[in-house]
Image 1 (cartoon, rainbow, N blue to C red):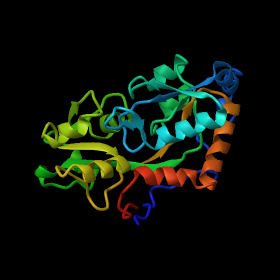
Image 2 (image 1 turned 180 degrees about the vertical axis):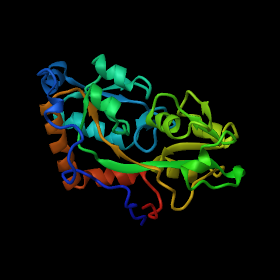
Image 3 (image 1 turned 90 degrees about the horizontal axis):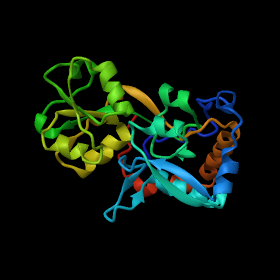
Image 4 (image 1 turned 135 degrees about the vertical axis):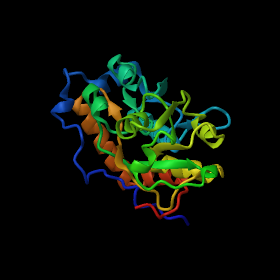
Length: 267
């Protein structure tokens, strides 16, 4: 049986929430009351990020966060309403009150926290480099990537692009608008490397023989995943307690194992 890598840590009840209750107080909005009044939980997802939120052969949403969204709506006793979003529009959609919670492998960032607040982190990973195997070259440091001869592919609007723009100003950056096809573009030679979260890089390298990942992969920046919500301290506290419950019951572990099949060598 494949053992979970040590990067896949459930941080619930062991770390301090990035957004304090005071920050999350907002203007007194009661999100849970709105959810019950509407009879639906509005969940934003991008549908393009394995293993958290993607689509199967029938174009149905699947993934760790998809399964947990269904579990959350069931516990609230309401229906589940999917809200399609993108990494570029995630914050704008929150400000426009288009969703009650974003469950799509969302990375904690200052920009997103300024617009709403986060639950306790439930998953840890880190930024790494996925390469085109035909390149026959490895990268162990950002300085090796920060060169005009290195073509780095990015999906606009997400934390991967922000990381590349901030840390690789001299690299040749290539924008690819569809995150669902970005790995195929990399494999086909449209770029040399992609910076992404290690958990996604592992899954893509295992499923596409044209893509390569170092073992263990270098982690250039640690990343925490959490659920992005409107500013409502009561909603935040209820969700944090729910996360603790499903972790303690083993439900989270069961969902995670359904979608993850990665080696145990990550630091």
